[in-house]
Image (cartoon, rainbow, N blue to C red; front, side, top):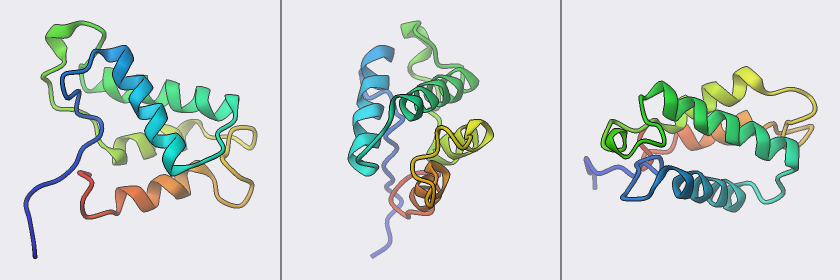
Length: 108
């Protein structure tokens, strides 16, 4: 069964900016179990970048704008990923996100 419905966890869904970032960190921790402080910092920077690039900031008036997607997160992380902040030596965070952005139920 095909559906036009998609899930975009980056949608603000009535949350304020700080709560949304915390929610995304929780989601990523669920997807990728062991996240180091440097990886968490990488994700935090990437979350902020993709929201700011979408014109979404701490200002409530911006929260109705079109949210970013996993594809944008993937690109932001890939651009900043180094040997020190990869999620594992064999499978960097970008590999995990690549599989997520291919998912048919997550908005690209």
